[in-house]
Length: 174
Image 1 (spheres, rainbow, N blue to C red):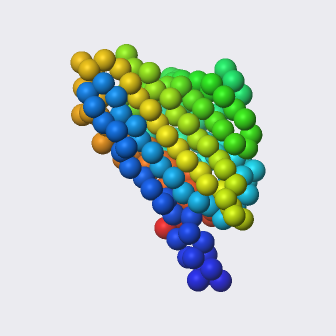
Image 2: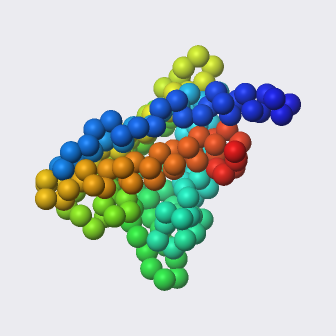
């Protein structure tokens, strides 16, 4: 049984997580994995943002206070007794194939940038190909190329947590 679980985790590990473009005025971070789950199950895991997002990358330090309203105009919100943050607005929610958000996460929130985060889910064999693409653009004076690698690292780690959560129910499982 352990061997099967290990095999499933290896199959579902992010096949690619990389910074695909970086310049002073833009960058693109892409992560992709094939999960041995149907799209509906991966979609459900994706919507449980508070269960897989790393609390170390939240303003409150508690991922459990994050909430995703998965409908156009909805948002990824973080509310706690010390404040609140709207991380992103939902542009498109098409279960179980596409979730598109607009918003600058982390240090990008304070910059005049446009940022779009896409999650696409496509059936592949008996599983689902999950792709996350984060596109960020602004003026060259924002020097986005200096933020590209650290933001990519956080987003790639978040994607890995999502994949682990979808597969095991535990985003920190190794």
